[in-house]
Image 1 (cartoon, each protein chain N blue to C red):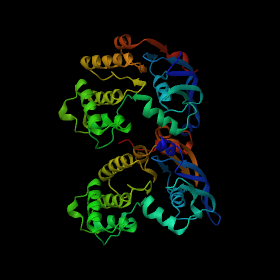
Image 2 (image 1 turned 90 degrees about the horizontal axis):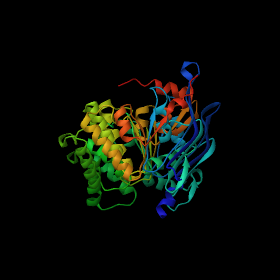
Image 3 (image 1 turned 180 degrees about the vertical axis):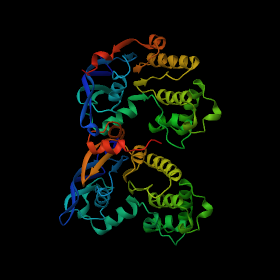
Image 4 (image 1 turned 135 degrees about the horizontal axis):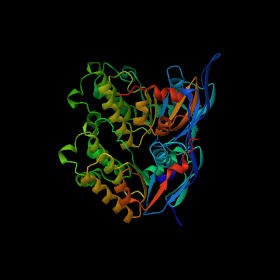
Length: 232
Length: 263
């Protein structure tokens, strides 16, 4: 089997030096894999380490042990030990990430925030903007807002900009951290559609969703994170 | 493919770099490789050795230990200490840029903005006045300076405009590497955001490599791919910028990150 993501015994502990060196175990023994076209949903109570696992797969949190195998440009890279340059290359052409909150750059127009991942991969600005517009329209962001920076938008609007930015590139892996949390029913349905479309295109996805109904609609498999929680 | 193999080779390599002033250690054991198109931020409090490091890397200061090598345009990696005068001049005038915190150090304050930009072109052999002026004026536009101001001297400019002019002056020769020393340091916050966004776009459009010294972690987050944290003249932590800032390991880095005031 050629998994896109293959995690074995990954673990993460925070050492809080400012709090007298307290060790805060987050997860231990994280092992699961994700096939192309599959959406794995991480479940477990808040604080169980779901977002931390996503961040480890994105290379945002360092991994203290184990292995995070990612299929990248025909070979497998272990993100737990990869060089920064390799992680950047993986992010450019293999893994997309829709974070819980949009980290907006001041002054950049919404349409450009969404188009950026395409431009970085060498697609012409005009075409990237056109695709960005199509997605923004689909996510019900009115055209008069496209030229404004998203920092002035409501929480739900920012989240939809974030989703558009995450879905615009056809990267083979997509990580989704609560993509529907602050959305109304109509926009939740659009996200479910986008996820379905990705599955048909063979994208491997790992998602965190608290909404039972959405989880039911998108999950091919559920991985219970509670078993990885390493707190005593 | 040829381009890709070139990108796979480092542009600048520092090995065990150190500088001492008598007994005082300004900087020691710094080793890293910078690749084409990569932006590295050097962060740390004042006195941590980051400005000394920048001067060593840009050959403005001779190291007491170790070496800095740079890949010249012919593809050969050369030790900076062994370069001839003509090669050094080529680096300073063409292939490198240096953006100072205080624009007055990087500009000639009494000559026109157009001449400030054009001067770097004349230094590399441009001699057609019309072409120099056109290029200067297109660079003023790129850094969002009204071209009506091309004949005014930078001493009549605001702080933010001066800093943008300094950037234009540096980038006009299409350098491959730009050193920046606290580029947003002297500016107020609204001006900083505009400048950062501008630098971010220029760096990615031109595929520039850059080494940015800053004590402002927000600047590092916005501009850089990788970060080195310095303390007491040593590099104490290094990695992807978002990794170091979101998951800092060293006590000092944790202190730096936790000291950011929420906006």
